[in-house]
Image (cartoon, rainbow, N blue to C red; front, side):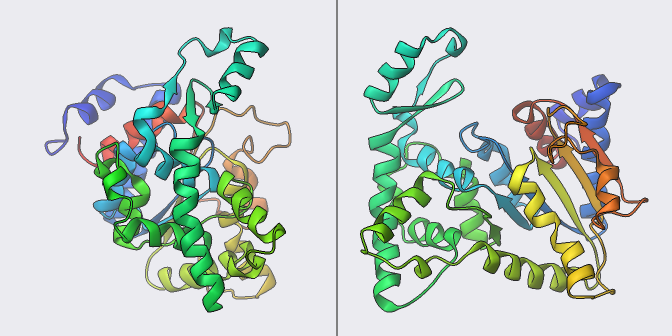
Amino acid sequence: MNNKGPISKFIVEHYKHFNAASLVDAAIGYETQISAGNKMMITLAGAMSTAELGKSLAEMIRQDKVDIITCTGANLEEDVFNLVAHNHYKRIPHYRDLSPADEKELLDNHYNRVTDTCIPEAEAMRAIEKHLYKVWKDADTAGERYLPHEYFYKILLSGNLEESYQIDPKDSWLLAAAQKNIPIVVPGWEDSTCGNFFASYCIEKDMKPSTMKSGIEYMMMLSDWYQNNTKNNGVGFFQIGGGIAGDFPICVVPMLHQDLELDHVPMWSYFCQISDSTTSYGSYSGAVPNEKITWGKLLPETPKFVIESDATIVAPLIFAYILNW
């Protein structure tokens, strides 16, 4: 603990039981994985980008504590929305008191609400759309095809957005990922605002759907990455929330074993899930880790942690511990 900062020392001293103790155990387990030379995947469901998780996640990426990310299309785009339009966001602390008429007023003023935070359509979504349109159209015209996150990397690394930054760019996890060129998996990317943009251009026959690589191609990429990165060490799985961001990538292991019949590929070496989903109702988010043993994803001896709490509170604390803050 001598190299740990005040946040780390506080949680070790005070977080002794229940979900608090699980948080500390999971953080120590994550650190043990990295120290052993294992790599780590982080998966992002929910609205983690709008929650500004980049304030801690970006530094995790820069310090090589994250090797690959799986996220929803919303988390992919919303980090960039926040990067260029943060000053125009509207926070509504008393969102529980809003009436349907209040919600309609937000819509009429082109604000889209995510719990207590409203994303401004013109300054965020439409501003990014014009940059994405250019790289999509250039690829379409040239007969080239890329994965969804690769187009975002193009607009970030071009420097064309820099004059529009409204937060410190070190707080953007996607920019940090682009600068490191770490792989990102975005299953179901079509289920996003920018996915809707792209679909509209295809409906208008302005672009071809094939210009955007598919989820199947993401699984093919992940299959290659996982095999290449488990030859000498393991890969851990740190899951924030549930849904497709968690279920899609963890399935690469049973696919390699059961469908490709590759018996030399190791299972995930660590598993942690932060979730507030109620268990036993059949949801993936609410499945306890032991259920994953039956699906060929984890071994009985795999270090497993579940923290039943709010990821916007828990994840930054775990990252702070790993970063020695």
